[in-house]
Amino acid sequence: MAVFYMHGVPIGYVAILLALVASMGGFIFGYDTGQISDILLMDDFLLRFATCGTPGNVFTCEFTTVRAGLIVSLLSIGTLVGALCGAPIADYLGRRYAMVTECIIFAVGVIIQISATTSWQQFAVGRWVSGLGVGALSAAVPMYQAETAPARIRGTLTATYQLFITFGILVAYCISIGTRNISGAGSWRTVVGIGLIWPVILSVGIMFMPESPRWLASRGRIDEARRSLARSHGVPRDKIQTDPFLVSKVDEIRSNVEHETRLRAGWLDCFRIQNKTLYRTLLGMSLQSFQQLTGANYFFYYGATIFVSVGIQDSFVTQIILGAVNFVCTFGGLYVMQRFGRRLPLIIGGIWQSCWLFVFAAAGTAKQPQDNPGIGKLMIVSACMFILGYAMTWAPGIWILIGETFPTRTRAKQGALSTASNWLFNFLLAFFTPFIVSAIDFRYGFVFAGYSSRYDLVQQTKAAEANKPLVSGDESRFEKVGESSTGAGTFGSTPTTTVASGSEGVAEPEKQAPLGHRHGTVASREDDAL
Image 1: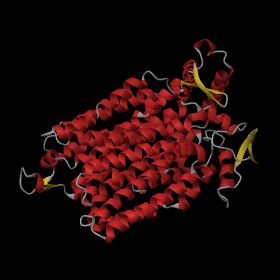
Image 2 (image 1 turned 180 degrees about the vertical axis):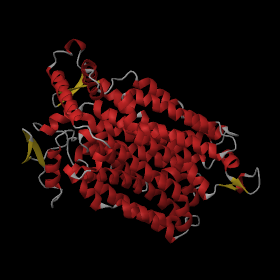
Image 3 (image 1 turned 30 degrees about the vertical axis):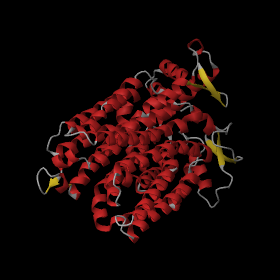
Image 4 (image 1 turned 120 degrees about the horizontal axis):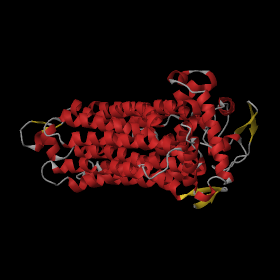
């Protein structure tokens, strides 16, 4: 039974539940990201894996730049490989069984980590194996959510993936502060070992959720696709065959899948210049890479170490504050992206982040924060304000845009390339940050500030600024929307909606309407058919 209706479209409780369960994939990544910052400072971890001037004396132990960089960044190398493999695995096994397989891979990596005794290489390899699972999940989860969630709330439900990433980071910080005083290896092994709980929750929970109706239809399993749609939309079982809404949806999915099959594309098709395919591929990869270059992971990976260096006595508490700001503000990000679209929040968010990064870097450069408590507090406040802007704009916005930018026949591959770009820059930042910080210290913030304000890049998202995801196989529609929107104009300019007439697209102006309130267009109907 439908829980509520949005613009006449029934929404079932399963739709909300499947988004939350699948988003555990984001929680797994967030937890694995958040834990390493605090683990690097735990006494037993330092004694076992760092270089100690006096054996057994933790105050003489520290990680070399290379060792710290590898321990942190090998996760990202694994996620890069996993992201590229995630789409093919999901296509072969189905979305749900792919996620179960990827959870098993992640669990294997966790076991390798907690079984390490004195070999830091083993711990690092375990993070790499876990990264394989995390990266594959990062491709499978948003795909599953986009294909299964009702179109009217798809943007919000897809953004729960980012929300759960922030929740995972916060939980990792809280668990770390609770285990740091445990004697021996239990301090860090408890934090890592608890990570086995999250893939179990995802693996079990996802098997009670419906499979992607699009994937089922692509395998010729139309009846199962109809039942999947009925569950997510709350249509009663006795009306599965007769409900007009459901019949229409099944017919649209079937026609779209047939169209996709005729136009099935390979990896090289992602780089063809026709119909702006190459442009969209590069746009997605650029947006994902610049999400990393905002500098958010500078704080998430090395936050505890950073705040020790500014003279904060308990950097663990500061990390929790940052994590809480990140998590709470992501709720605001869900509203901002749903209410104001994508491009404008990204531009404003980028400028906001840039300003506070300048404050952070300038304060740390002007005076020694260790000798000036006021400077240290200012740097913490600026870091929190930066995270506020990031969590409300660039954090959820990029993931939503990736799901809305690519045409049906190349969506999975272009999405994988974009996500791989995110993980590549994640690795580069995680590995090289210790080297850069040792050379230029807090001036590193100026580097991120320059990237955060990249207005010219976000301007290019005009072509992707669809208030509804573009899911049609008719690429001429995107071509015309892109041409009309990449011209000169302002934020208040009249957008265009393209209505297909036969095999051609004719651009027609449409009055501006709030996100999710546009009707009567082919783009909207095909969006519902996703």
